Image (cartoon, rainbow, N blue to C red):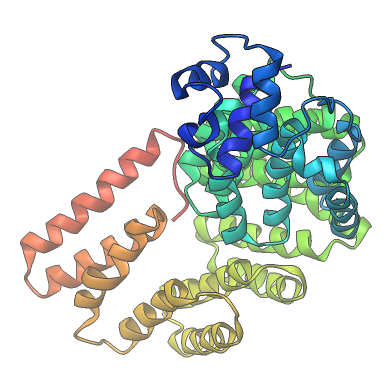
Length: 426
């Protein structure tokens, strides 16, 4: 048994220093050696240290409900069976050893992070992640795997997609030493594909989505297979392989229609709208965005619903349908007013297009001072590029050629960066 890791875990958990735990028993330096597994102390010393921490030295580390119970809970989280996951969590909390045993507690906390994200408790998940990170030097390789997986998920939910992909790749490195079931392998591949796609690492996203899809199809998992086809469609669209993109989307459409999956229907119509817009078929794009919106309002997140409204604003402005554009801007404001989330970033889009339609002479200043810096801060290069081109044109019209060139260079540099990764959807 790894007594050193157990001692360090409980000492840190209880907020004790090495001096406080060692006082009157051994020297702090000797305790440090024990915690780092550099020496094997006498049982009498361990008994005294355990007693000070309120632990029973003779209570076996493995005298607890099996870890399979925790893995059962984790499986319900991965497959998003919310009610079942909540019940299993309550059951686990009732079992004293879940929170008192080092081995079980680490896994419980690592799985709890993903459960909090499933419940959309992002801030609580981040706090739980910061807390468990303090114990990382007590982790074995299996714990490291779940820690980096959790880190990748937290980064994803916080919008840092490149960091998310790096953490998930680190999890993949540890997975070689962990006996993962097929459903966990496919989950890892899918998360890698998702984070790579958001980070505009297109080739990596396609590779991992194909790996995940192969496993999901063997399991006859229609929902997860559809998710992979959606990702593949997005990535092929970015590579301008529109035929391959639409092929994947139509496969999802068939599955979604058969299973009455309104969420996927909303996604598919929206994504087909993106493809048609890029092909220059603006009327068809608008038609698909409009088809998407009712489905999205029934099932999608606030961010996804606003994304479709934003695309309707963008398309109508682009083709000069300003009255329709104003209508969608108004719907955007109405929707954001009813949202419980922070909408300040989304409101920037509405402000920009309102100013553009009204020929507001402060538009360029707003883009320079508010819009572009916000999207740079949030690493949303798609909007940095789009608004940099707009402000460059406005500044050129104002004869501010030096500032105009600055934003053209910013847009071109970002486009070049993303061209190395497979492109970016504008």
